[in-house]
Amino acid sequence: MAQAVLLDNGGWRVKASTSSELLPQVVVSNCTAKLKGHLGLLVADDCDQVVRTQQLTFKRAAERGYITDWSVEFEVWQRIFGDRHLRAHPPAAELYLTEAPLTPQFLQDFCHEMVFEQFGFLRLLKAPAAAFAAYRYGLEQPDPARCCVVVDSGFSFTHVMPYHEDRCLVDGIRRVNVGGKLLTNYLKELVSYRQYNMMDEFMLLNDVKEKCCYVAKDFEAELKRTRQPVAGQPPIERSYLLPDFQSRMKGHLLPLGTVPADEEAQALKIENERFCVPEVLFHPSDVGIKQGGLAEAVHSSVEALPWPLREHMYKNIIVIGGNAEFPTLLDRLEADLRLLVSDDYAIRLRIPDDPINYAFGGMILAREAGGAHFPILTKEDYMGSKG
Image 1 (cartoon, rainbow, N blue to C red):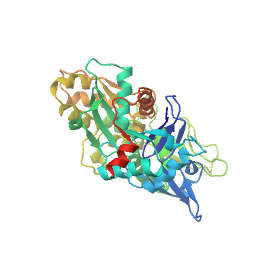
Image 2 (image 1 turned 90 degrees about the vertical axis):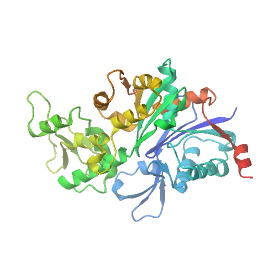
Image 3 (image 1 turned 120 degrees about the horizontal axis):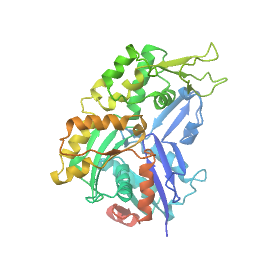
Image 4 (image 1 turned 180 degrees about the vertical axis):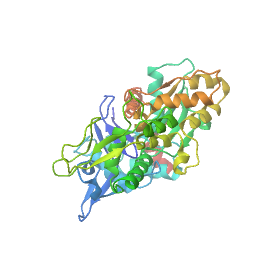
């Protein structure tokens, strides 16, 4: 039996494995980089080892959610498949791969060329991460109608994808052009305008976002609380101690009510940015994107489907991806959806315990089932199609 290589190929990270565990063996950055003043190329996990990331010039494989720079992707995959990580032998293996929904055909052609001609894999099973999440959800939370809506909010974008009997209903696919990258860049701008110039500190501000930000259940009430603190409730303002690259190589969030022990230490004060940044997921117009937010996308997706399916779809909404880890996101999404959806329908949303790796676990389960329900392209069929 051919070895199976699993690759969740995200715009931010690549997760890979050859084992049957539901968690990836390898997680690396999906990029290459050059250190200022040096000619050498840093690939994937090399970039993760650099402390002063502001000295790096990154080159990412993904642009707006789609893999467009396949020379970068080749370097990253070669590192993952090599002796440093998986020690895979592609000519005797099959590849399970995620790709962005509705990827243009010419980009898929580049992918097939690299998979079969450059690496020589025997077979390719390729589907959006949401498809693997839906497959896993169907096994763990079986619904009589076999319906679910997957909200995949990651680094580059957010997609809403409805599934019925393991098949994506294309008419219901909706995309919101907001992902973790945009949110981090927005936080960079806010902090740079109000405090320190952080425009070259993407990695640092990404850590600030992940540790400080949350979704406001009631945005107006939360904004009012920043101006008029409520007795008995913790203050909104938090401080993030910045690294000095001498005694502190990494920054960290200070406990409530504490100040840096070192008087010369610099700390970012994060106040309404904590909930204003994730608010863009619900109101993209805040940053000039003329789109509805998460709730509108889910509502539009389900309402585009045949009415007998809608009841089951609203009761089986699952949210995955890095942005699903924002505290209270589920409460806000449910509240906003309730305002849009008819009272005739019950609404049930779920966020898995590990929303980042949930789809990867679905890939493992799909492999154990022999790739049933997923399209498979063999090397023979690919080479035959080229004449």
